[in-house]
Length: 358
Image (cartoon, rainbow, N blue to C red; front, top):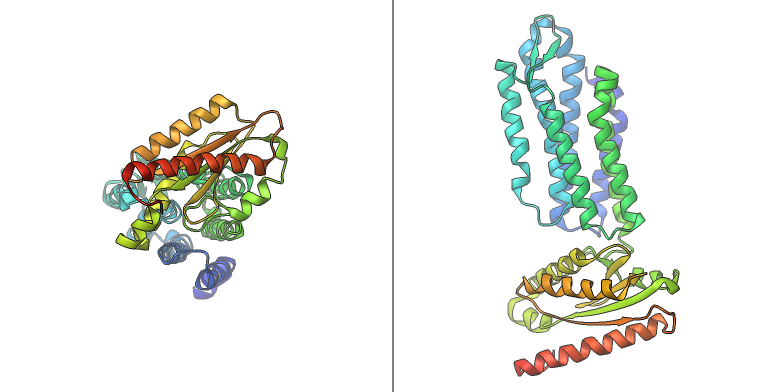
């Protein structure tokens, strides 16, 4: 039986082993994210054992009806749990509440062993769907849709991020649809599909780290300098943003509090962006928003959204901007102009507080 398992799942085991090794040597991810990814690896590995045992051992003997029922309940419950764990791992600031629908589904699935509400194992070893027979697929589908939505929302809307998100979502949705096409045969590649999709997405994520700020998830200084050289004639506005009081916050509450402030502000800026607007963290507390083919009214609305979002937090920042739609100013000129406005706002803020600017 072990030989058959290894032959059927050898590609998956190699991918999971490579995934685990890559995580052990990466310097781009924080320890919490790495731990959660290890949980995903273990979960997919255990699911492969469950799937193999169900289809290659329990499904062929009427004497193992109860065992197959238990294994089916685990398999139906596992996919939503894996996808919710992906959300918990990849999307910042997710709480354990994301697992509640998966926990409820697990209770329903295990109750089905005795009630047949989701599935029923017949005496000949076959199974039939109950009145809630498609519930596990619906819950998993909702989780997939939520995952795609959250990943797209937290992304910088660049192709280098949209493509891996599309790949991951395609693989996960395929795992929900193809079982209806290939029936039990799909079980042989079910877990491999998940494992390969996760590892491929991880590789894409690591490749993106050269252009992303590891703390905030925004584009970084390197990406900014690369992007302003690409079709500079399309750049109609720049927004300079600098947090007020970061040094004081670091000195009094520690750098962890300062990091939390930067992450919170970055989220405020990101949520304010619209099409063809990109935010970069170019320094410790310095941010730039680059706008392509943005009208002046759209720039005004962008700044208003930023101020409204920041106003809902305990933090404060200075904002400056420069607009030019006729090509008369270079990007460097626009940056100098927006920086001057931003520093004037910053000086005024500290003077009103009666503090030295820091």
